[in-house]
Image (cartoon, rainbow, N blue to C red; front, side, top):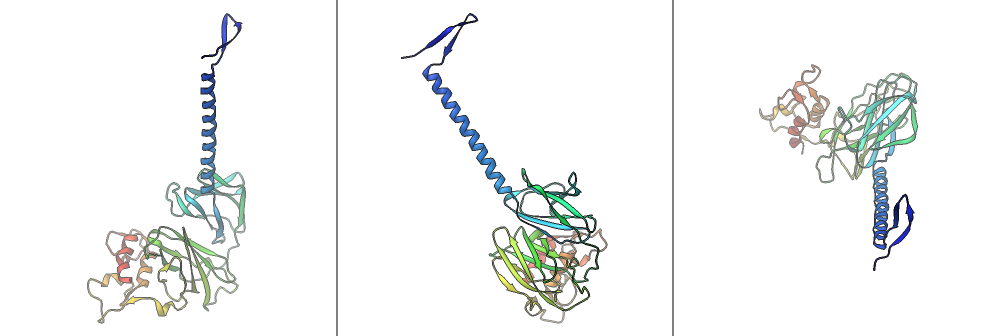
Length: 321
């Protein structure tokens, strides 16, 4: 049975009340629309949570630059806008991004060309959100004499001894500010120590310091001597806690059976000291770049392609196992 109700004529027409079937269709459409809107809001909420910055830290503070790192639950693009005034802010990309933001879970941005003893305001742009709503701030320090110490150089590996994509290395030295860096290709890192500011910057006495390694799903820690006794650390595995203060006694190396290396192996002895060890890897890592830069050491170009990069490091790695 079909029910129809009619109103009186309006403008020579008849306005009909919908049938029960029609009203049912309208009701289903209304419920479906509400569900879709709710679902869309839920997805947006989850996306915001996964791209919200966590563990935000300001490190490497000196007179003209600082670094800021943070984490996100999902692979997310991220960059920073910072400046002296709220409305005059410059964009700074992740240290690994060349032209445009790329997605990462660990983010590391270095702000350069800053002014000494100046307060800067900044916000993180992570995915589709701006964090936080009110800008954070930091203050650069006065110009000061830096220490003339060599950098910490090393490699971070996964629990299964394979190289990892990204990890942040944080140096905690007593009575000094935190220094940090992020791994490059193949889990390699170089942490300059020139940013250390001590009360007596000319001292050369060794001090124990802690390295915290922050991976995507795991962490590690290592005790090291500062200034470093060797130019390169042995690989640090995620999920471990190691003491590297006796590195000069524990660093693995290949000692030639004769007084000289074979013709095939001699090219891997990049520092020409007669052995192949992590010092040779350190030399390669510190010379990443094109040989068109005359400051680069051509001995680090193991594959002779005029570029010192991860390919050269990979050629050396089998001799360090």
